[in-house]
Amino acid sequence: MPELPEVETVRRGLARHLPGKRISRLEVVHRGGNRQSSELPLPSVKGATIIDIQRRGKFLWFVLDRDYALVGHLGMSGQMLITPRNRPDEKHLRIRIDYGDQKREFRFIDQRTFGWMAIDSLVKVGRKKLPQSFLRIAPDIFDSEFDRASVIARMSRSKSEIKRVLLDQGIVSGIGNIYADEALWLSKIHPERRADALREEEIRSILRSVRYVMTRALARGGTSIDDLYINVNGESGYFAISLNAYGREDEPCRRCRTLIRRIAFANRSTHYCPQCQPRVPTRTPGKTTGKTTGKTSEKTKGRKGGK
Image (cartoon, rainbow, N blue to C red):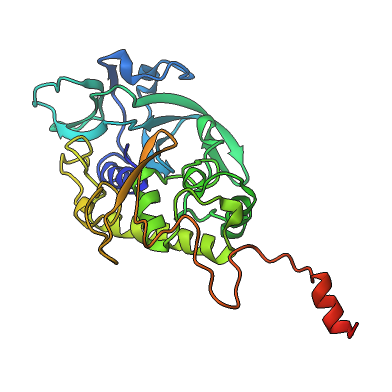
């Protein structure tokens, strides 16, 4: 499934073509591209002007000069393309938007039909308005509203495995299987360690790693594991050649040469290095791997008090 770097690459591509354009027609070629909970039928956007293309985690948002938004999700295999009008329709074409360009049009193509587009009402949140379906989606690590301290606190309280916490879009959005594996490898954290057993510095390291690997992926147009993820011009992302963990089962770890392992976790494949990412972390003399409580033990009290 496309994750933040892939969706952001698509957003940037759309933002070069669509803002300022007026939608003269939206055609639902196949109903599989239309989310059933859409506030209005998709063709209702006819006549609306596209103000901007924004993103929330893995979701795309067409800002319109209306009191509603056109939102979309790529699902497993969705492609949002700016393509020549005279090109034959693709087999899995779902939605077409004519935005007044004599040479190009917008097409939403989805082979596996998990992607969708819909019209959402806008809800005021603080000083801005968000589509209704985005309210449960937390800001991503690049968002100006991302609250690192709050995210660390929420992760520290979770009794779930850290990989599962990273995939929770209500805590921090945009992270999927690929970049969770990559960030945990970079931080040397086993994916099945419980979040509430991690030290604060370990969680900080994971978040730094998330930002680092996603920044690198964005520079290369995202990750293309197969030919389904492409940007608006039909080109694939090239970050896959730089992956350290994801998809590298039985290949040597780039740090220690131990073979990368794959396990089934949270209905997904998870990749990690058993040497660099031990399930039980090695204790450093004079330090503990658990969280400090700020409390002094009775034995320590006795020594300090001279009793």
